[in-house]
Amino acid sequence: MKQICVVGVGYVGLVTAACFSDLGNRVTALDVNEQRVENLKKGIMPIYEPGLDELVKRNVNAGRITFTTSYKEALKDAEYAFIAVGTPSGESGEADLQYVAAAAKSIAENMTTPLVIINKSTVPIGTGDWVADIVKGAQPKPVDFAVVSCPEFLREGSAIGDFMSPHRTVIGSMDKDAANKVAHLHLPLRAPIVITDLRTAEMIKYASNAFLATKISFMNELADLCEHVGADVKEVAAGMGYDARIGRHFLDAGLGWGGSCFPKDVEALAFMAKEKGLNPRILNDVMEVNYERRTVAVKHVEKMVGGNLKGKTIGLLGLAFKPNTDDMRDAPSIDISKALIEAGAIVRVYDPVAMEVARPLLPDVKMFKDVYEMTQGCDALMVITEWNEFKQLDLAKVKGLLKSPVIYDGRNIYDPKVMKELGFSYRAVGR
Image (tube, rainbow, N blue to C red; front, top):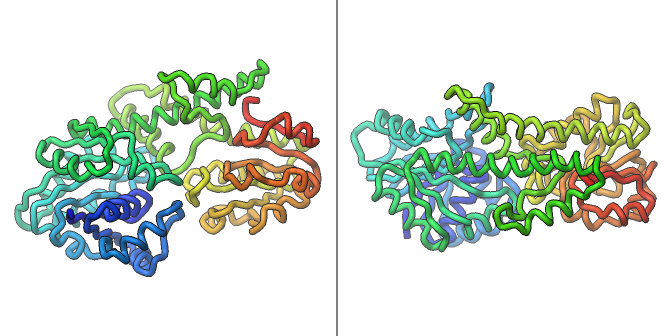
């Protein structure tokens, strides 16, 4: 049993803490947000993530995980300290490292025994060296430590599965012994382990996310061409995906990417390139194509309801940036809702889990607890999030409730042939 401290109990930190405790380790999860820690002690999760509630409660009951706001308590007897705090985008697209710096300083001030400090947060290239300097400078008296980069590759909505069955574990450090210790910690996961230097490990994280975002934007650009030449982008993606060099994942055309990772990571990588005097043309285009999808979707709906959105009631199916999460960070629904309202439309929404998170972000949008109640009297529906619930709607009932049988499918969850047979005015992406 290893003694582990995890600083930060957001998506990455809480999943990391819960999963390591489930592997039999003793974990103390720390956060400076007192209310969040108190809620966790009561079994109230700060986020929606399938399976996380049960995982945390099981390990709390087993005595393997505890929560605190005290660095002194969290670091007592700890062998490893994971930094898993937020790194939001700054004004120019750079990663804001104030929370990483605060965590490193507090760790330095409270550590009393040798420690392996592990950057789990997504941080710019060179942050590992910077953290080491902060720790060294803030220690009241010298205590041995090493800094290791071990970036996360967790997808919201399937984070526990991704942690427990990773494609690979990336570990970077200038200290070989520290890297081996972190590798040993991950051995129970039985996944390939890549050990490299600090900066290369940090770059692997950014490069991975930027490449996946590029695949999505490429398919969205291709979807526009498919519409003009009469091809079906879903079939194109299926045909491409059989090629092992391409793979089947992240080839879905739609409203583009959002969330906490792709937007800020692509932007941060582009910022780093510009700082070094480079021109990140591909990264810039990837971002431009992505955000254009939201504007294009609104324009399509405008045409479908007669060329004018003023006074029209538009219902949104979904708010979260992807299914199985309540995360509204950079969700397409925000820009789409605001654009519809600016055009004079009345916007209604339904989402299975994200409405409470979305409410302060979209105060002018009316939210409903029932999808059919939301649908009644709408001039059109827009599929924003591909929740399974929406794939199984009673479409005949939906048609009867709509003022006009108009659906814009921003996630390609329905079959165009079936929709036509049901009598819908239906438009998908790239089909």
